[in-house]
Amino acid sequence: MANKKLKKLTPVQQEYQKAAKLREPKRPVFLNCVRAFVTGGLICVLGQAIQQLMIHWGGFDEKRAANPTVAILILISVLLTCFGVYDKIGQWAGAGSAVPVTGFANSMASAAIEHRSDGIVLGVGGNMFKLAGSVIVFGTVAAFVIAVIRLLVRGG
Image (cartoon, rainbow, N blue to C red; front, side, top):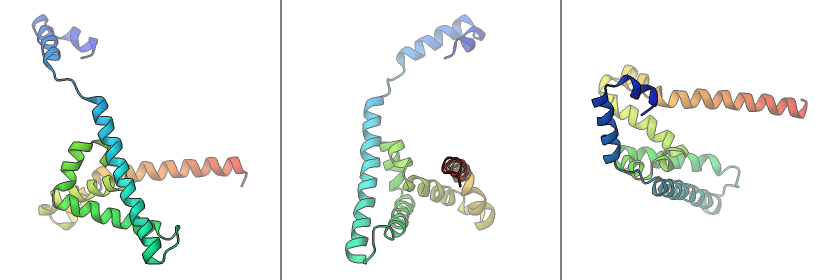
């Protein structure tokens, strides 16, 4: 707890905070990092495998296989979210399942599932972008800033 907050607490409360901190279980930070790395890596390997299948059997070239690959990963993520599997993966893997495009699809699908009883417009449509909306906005702003910087560096 921050020192400023400790100063506002009574001595008994401060003593309780110290005792609670001693009994608080330690977080396995290294293990969590390994889990996130492995899970994110496996999602990327799955994406690469799908892309190679699209190239080999789908007749796509490498550039054109990217979009259907992302769509398939999103579909897999949404299906796993619907069946409750992606949440279990997310609890085990942490950020490793949240960072790739599958995590973005999971956040949108879970919000839609959670608010479906409120109706399509006000429930699903109104709440689906609460978490994903900030990602879209800041992603768009970051892309714009990078494009302007690139334009300025290249000189037009």
